[in-house]
Image 1: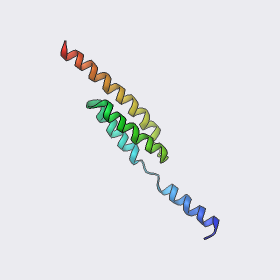
Image 2: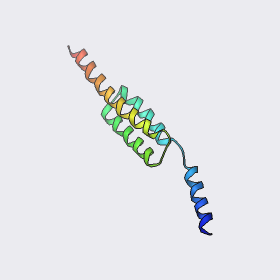
Image 3: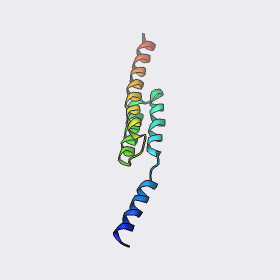
Image 4: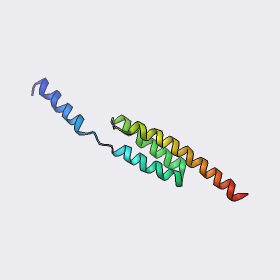
Length: 87
C-alpha cells in the first residue's frame, strides 16, 4: 500500500468516527444534575464533554459549557431550597 492510499484510508476512518455520543451523554447527565447530586453528576458531565472534545465531536464544546452552567445552577438551587425549607 503506497503512502497516498494509506492517507486516504486514515482520513476515511477519521471522518467515519464523527459521532456525538459523549456530547449527548454530557447533555443528559447535565440535565439530571439540575435535579439531583449536582457536584457528582456535573463532574461526570464535564468529563464526558472533555472526552468528546478530544474525540473532536461537533457539539462537545457546547456540552462543556452547559455542563458547567447546569452544575452551578443545580448547586445554587439546592442551596436555595435547603435554606427555604429550613427557615
